[in-house]
Length: 266
Ligand SMILES: [Zn+2]
Image 1 (tube, rainbow, N blue to C red):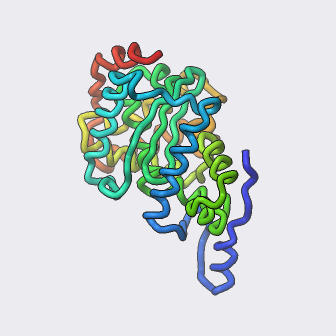
Image 2: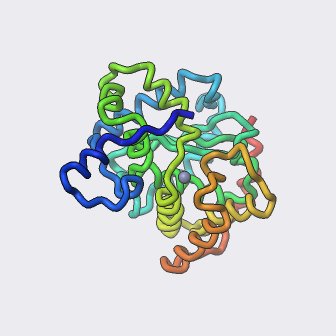
């Protein structure tokens, strides 16, 4: 893990007399959308270049599994609530690691899902919920904000300009363990409901995942989803509350073909 550094821009804002409640939550973002997309593209390349940490499954070797996953993802992306649907490249990739229950997003909408997560889940709705959560981290620009905050603007800009390969590798290596603030997690959970409300899936699908984790007492090896803030029980409640606010269907779609999808994985 890389140690968090004090964001320089927070101090700068205070100096200029801006009133800001918290640098963690009210999120100045200095890099442009184009720069953010370029950063995501470079991180994707760095991930593909590091099969020891990220054994990304090749699409040509597992076309069926990719088609299945992409169909779910495209369904989510068709939601009107996705702000950068047109602008971001939006790619989804499988990482072969059955012991990791995780997924993560880079800036610009590159999403990576571990086989361990897919096999752990019982229902496609739950996976859709988690993918919605990750899509939200990208679409709400959380991933870019966290990276900018952690490394500082000048370093991030040098990475984007291709002048800092060492830090690019470092950022890519830290993505799976990138910690979001409590507010970002809550916001992504709630946004996932908005996205799924436009699909046939149970719009609270992300909540079922946290419920399963709570029921089974899983604790560990899941830095993103089981991070202590907020705790899984609160997240289930928050997601259910949001689903009620939105008035979307929480009846599971639960297509039986999800088991076939699992069998397409190595
Ligand atoms: Zn998250």
